[in-house]
Length: 153
Image (tube, rainbow, N blue to C red; front, side, top):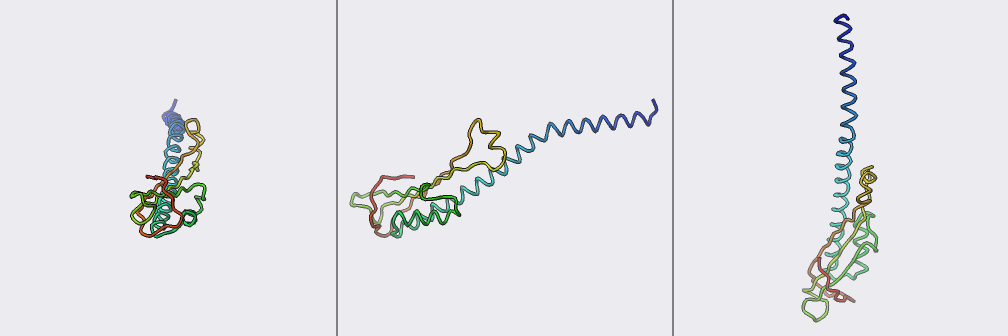
């Protein structure tokens, strides 16, 4: 066999070896990319619901009622939350009814479904994640109709 024919054969073997290595590394690379994308999107959505819960708690400190707080949290969440995902509770620390110095606690829950095929890969363990956020602030003004529920974050 000539030297030229040997080089041609060696190049074909190297190309085949490269294809096998690529086929072995590609699934790992894709899984890492899916994890990065899903983590980024999930973290972004968690930040949105955390901000929305904080906004609702702040509104509750200045005398807003529970339905007004739920509406604010829902509108601040960029469409991620509705009123069934939001809990507004009050804590009466001094026993004289809910008022200044007591606390309003706003909790928000969001069911995050994976946006990449990672959810299908991990479906054996869990199909989605529940993201939760809680904001607890001290009430500054009287709140009409607030009842102590003993809530804590």
